[in-house]
Image 1 (cartoon, rainbow, N blue to C red):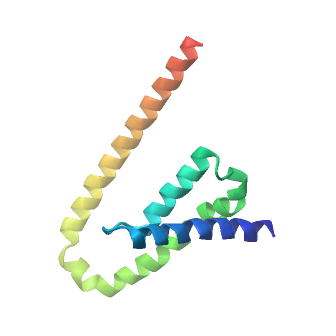
Image 2 (tube, rainbow, N blue to C red; image 1 turned 180 degrees about the vertical axis):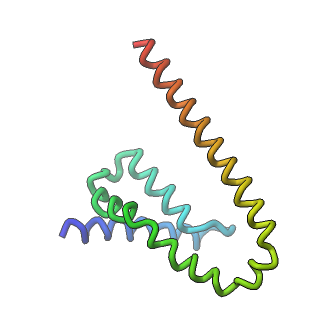
Image 3 (cartoon, helix red, strand yellow; image 1 turned 180 degrees about the horizontal axis):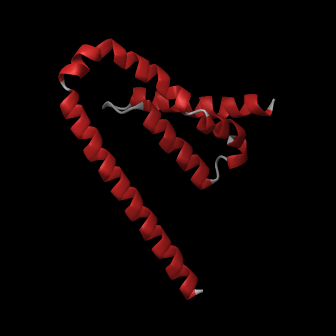
Length: 121
């Protein structure tokens, strides 16, 4: 029963994101609105982590399955991808290096802040 309630909470947040997206005068992804809404609810205490912990752990553990439909549907556009594979490869490599660099800098900065806090205590 607990899992069903957790699914209901996540569904309600997603549904609220859909409603907010429909009310906005500009185009914005409902999934992003839902994630921001969920973050705000968790950060303000409007929603406790225990209300969604088991279901979110399950979704995170099985995240790779959610990428399968997108990967399979790319096969429908193989002729388009084949004609632009060099550009796609360059974009993937450049963005991969940028993401690695941003992650490394974020980790270094976080460790610096933690070390600085430890010294001041």
